[in-house]
Image 1 (cartoon, helix red, strand yellow):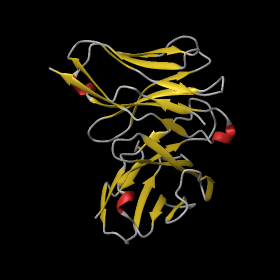
Image 2 (spheres, chains in turn red, orange):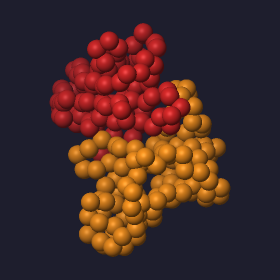
Image 3 (tube, chains in turn green, brown):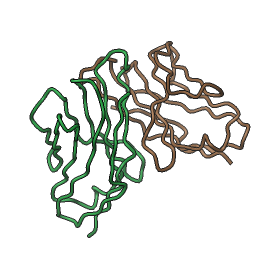
Image 4 (cartoon, one colour):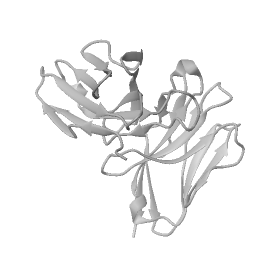
Length: 117
Length: 117
């Protein structure tokens, strides 16, 4: 079974600065999908960014980018020019492409990001 | 376009009562996932349903929990004889299809927070 580990329960960053959130995962599969979700105080789960394991290029969405290291099974999220609205819980998630997995998501425990003005 | 709707947003039950949580997927989506988020934890998969069928219930507790997704109407997660340990946020996600393609994203609802007194 796949596992996802987020080793930083809490992180803080100054507004306009850059912060990196860590995520590692364990899998024996060679192809899979990785995601970062944001959960603000409203508790709504918002997809921030996704990465297909077969793609070597790191995904980027505006101020959000990932550092995907497949051999190391690492998938960190970098937030540039942090804004107050970025304050939230961030979850890393894994999804197997295998039909038998039924494509369910496996989540880490989350990292609570605080943005200081 | 309406996203995934869940109701109620907050539900309070006394021990021994029944809780019924509803999820209306994105229009046109026929695949529904239920996840549970315990305090201080990430989301954990419970059950995956397609219209009128339970596909994967490997994450559901063996007793007291059931789910359905009828041909017409919302998906229902039912918890009988609730206990304090059932207190959690319950999230529903829907997808257009069940394939591995990244285009079959799971869109999350806002969750139902269940409190058992």
